[in-house]
Length: 152
Image (cartoon, rainbow, N blue to C red):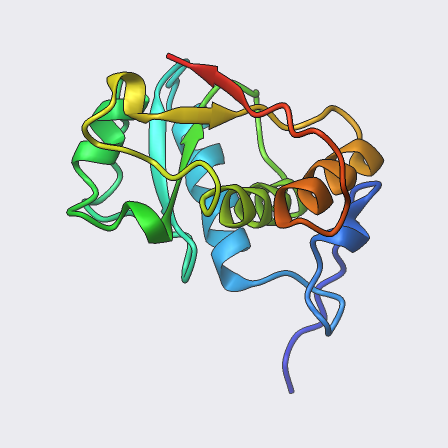
């Protein structure tokens, strides 16, 4: 018999949950990796997160810039999210939302190892509803102007 694990979900989490109501192992791994770096005292930097499993291409390296993280992903930019270590922690719900958001925006604004700063960085909206509208506009489901983000 498997142990029962009670997980409290963040507000708005329903948009990032899988069909069974839980979160993927990729989200769990990303949250664990993010929090481990923060517990070890890392204040700034970027980590890689594969969409498939939340892991990294080269261990637990923290890169000082997004471009360096992209350049060390072994030409796998299209299946990798680059997560900035700025928040004090990351819940599993937030990790699932981060992976979901990056998976959507990579089609429109892919990471570019040749561009300054690694290419266009899409800035997500602050609340869940606006993020959902932004993703709908990115995917073409809504006819809205898409404000993409910044270049480093």
